[in-house]
Image 1 (spheres, rainbow, N blue to C red):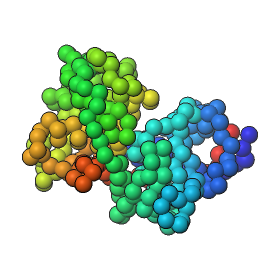
Image 2 (cartoon, rainbow, N blue to C red):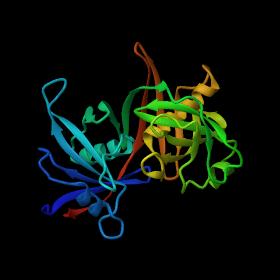
Image 3 (cartoon, helix red, strand yellow):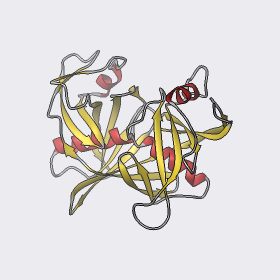
Image 4 (cartoon, rainbow, N blue to C red):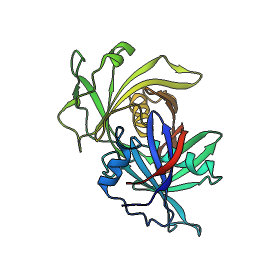
Length: 278
């Protein structure tokens, strides 16, 4: 049992999070309590819960914020980017905009401009091969491309927005051969034209490997842009706009001495505040 505690519900990309401040990481929350809080019928209702705590710095003297994200069923959440953007929105409302946030994927550099939050995700790599992907209401299996960006993804290009819209993603897409760790599958359609104002444009739908279909995802947007740029060749832009069902993300691909790195940009909005208990 926990005492009533202030929370803020924040939405990013159509994914909504209950954000709790727990600076000393002393709040005891088990998976059943988190599931009860996130239940959309008997609780507050959310995609997941984000606990913000202070952690010892890896660099510098000041403590860093740690994002502890959980799925709606209480399980540990993978980095999808939206939970970090939601956490930064919460902190910005309290005049505390971090330049670095700690997560299970490591330290993430943060840049805030207006209501936009940019998250540096680091390096990426091709992984998982090129499996054939079969999904409901897709006439024939399509080839995908394995991309590892924080977590494993397979990106599939479709020929039209109609194909993208008619997909039935209530069931998990089937991959042959199965990729590493059951990757998140991202279906994309290039914009018409692909390049607008010097930026690549895509529409996407995402089947998250842990959650099923989700409205969008910042990391999945990064994987989508990487795959389409890989297919398009070296002349393709390094800046992309990727639109999901309920939002859009900017993607920046930068060449560094260590290789190509990826940053994603998105926004979040505060829905309401209150007190929760379980």
